Length: 126
Image 1 (tube, rainbow, N blue to C red):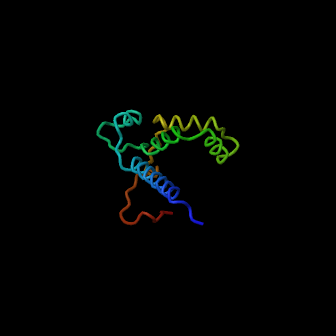
Image 2: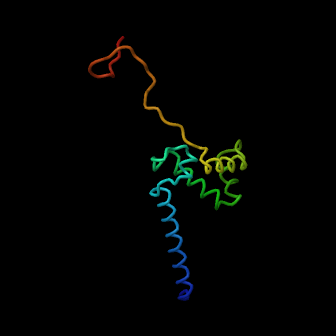
Image 3: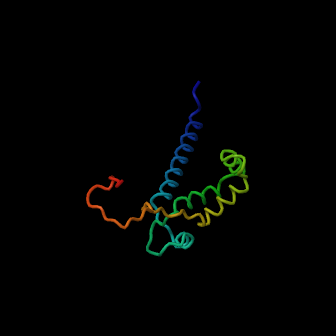
């Protein structure tokens, strides 16, 4: 038994539309620079095209816009019993507003020394 041509055409058209939507969403996340509203929400300067926290903010905006209530219940269930769905919803809303800017990482190890060692630094003095 073969599926009728009109249903196959509708199926392939829907599948193509979903692929195009996912491609556009990924391109929006990765390649499109921040607009003035997003720069202001993240506290970035006007010349910074991709401020820190832009991609998580955009992802959270998409989740807040299209996710049903069941999504927050599922995420809270995956995170453990101590997290409520209301907390997940509030966290996503705050992240979508730009308040969830990630902490900057420090490259310094925090070890201070008053000695300057010439040569390899893995040798320890007894």
